[in-house]
Amino acid sequence: MCGITGVFAPGHDAARLAFFGLYALQHRGQESAGIAVSDGGTIRSHREMGLLSAIFDEDILSNLSGYISVGHTRYSTSGSSIVVNAQPLLESSEIGDFAFAHNGNLTNTDELRETLAPTTILQATSDSEVLAKLIVEGAGTLIDRICSVMRRARGAYSVVLCTRDELYGFRDPWGVRPLCLGELGNGAYVLASESCALATVGAKYIRELERGEVVRITKSGLESRTVDVDATPGLCMFEYIYFA
Image 1 (cartoon, rainbow, N blue to C red):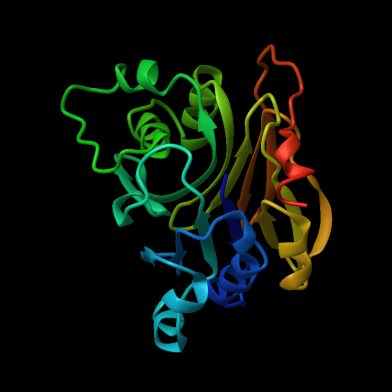
Image 2: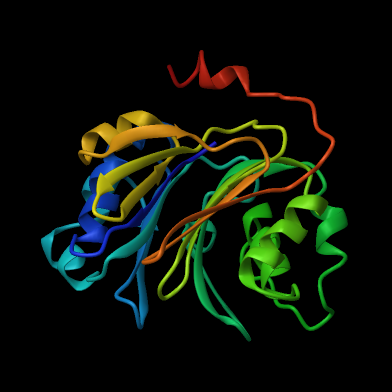
């Protein structure tokens, strides 16, 4: 159980929007936090153990320049509470680099790990890295790879992912963990675990992502795709009780 944010906001400071959005989600995870930002060419990131207020200062945020970001506050449910498991994770593939932040807990991690290439090196001990590596090793476009992984992964996952010039968000077919979509206007969008993060950064709440939905956000607009998986709705009761 963690807090995640995704920002696509040309003309805005995506790192600061991520910081304040994550600040509103600090209750979802207090072990570590991180933000990754793209300026359209390069992805930069910073992640550490601890609370947001202790990790990010003016100098660090100023060095994270860009208009696309993903952010994460961690509450460990898979993998040790160590900095190597802090997110966002940075990955490289033949179709480009991306930053990846995951909220949830997979139930078939061991099975998925065994399908990875023998040459794949896992640096973290969390299920999140397995999910990210499956995307790296996939085929087709990035959205094709995401949809393929969603058909194989079991359990809870709401994910935000940014490339150099695109933002993606996707939610598991059971809808165990929430993921909200908001709009800042003029083609700027925000994704977050809870609507309170949208309100904090001044974004208008649009809706929750549907179960099994993937959204792709670019300068051309927002594209949505739904993965058809036979799954019974199962929002976690902790969202109403523990996090309320």
